[in-house]
Amino acid sequence: MPALPAGFPRDAVLEAAMAAADVARTVVLPFFRRGVGADDKHDSSPVTIADRTAERAIRAVLSERLPGFGVMGEEFGLEGGESPYRWVIDPVDGTRAFLTGRPTFGTLIALLHEGVPLLGVIDQPVTGERWIGLRGEPTRFVSTITGQIGTRRCGDVARAELSCTAPEILDAPHRPGFDALAGAVKRTSWGGDCYAYGLLALGQIDIIAECTMKIWDWAALVPVVEGAGGSMTDWAGQPLRADGDGTVLALGDAGLLSRVSTLLAAPVGAG
Image (cartoon, rainbow, N blue to C red; front, side, top):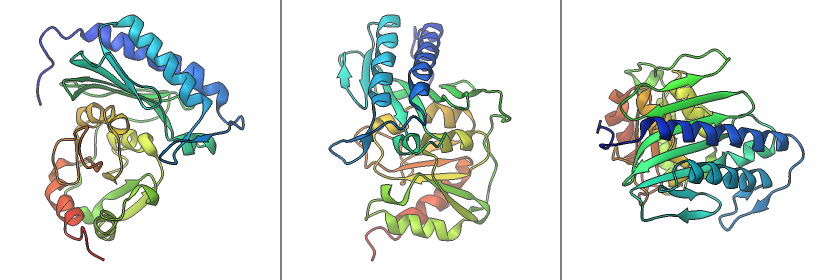
């Protein structure tokens, strides 16, 4: 795993990320289960006042704390793109869950250096759970709810718990591969958004396979999962990139990669 860049302002970065996550909680919670309406974006995904207000608040905190860093958010795009450091934020990852009162959405805050995720935060405002991953360090889990960081060893796909947010995020070329994987594992569960990746980091889930993911959907997850002992790649086992194919594969046990990637790849284009 690459080291942090020379001169990386570790403490300032962590303080800024924690302050931004704290502010996001105070913004999002008053809207939860209050009958908030949603608008459809160009890709038909919903967006609410909670998404927009939380992103503005996060941007304000990060820009004030570390003004030389760029900031990219799902709702309001990129500012300060010339910096090698870039915050990537998703104020409410799992808006459908938020709209229907499920506490499985989360706020995602990542810091990238030249495209590589260095820091990732998953924050669940309702349950008060927070996962903090920093490259080269063990992931931390801050919560009053039971849970211990550490992915589960699982050497056999047939014993694995597979998760995916929803069937509709699986695009047509990749659905046969997912079905092949689902047929090989012990059990498949649906739902979770970013929360599922936090559960994988706690050793509750073994495999997450998803499609149509944007950088703000996965950037914060990489340091969290890797710092807990897992791996994050695309379905072919390659590092995730902003210009990638949108597939994301999280494994609690990286030893599963070859077998899982084969299952996901073999049927592509079939049917």
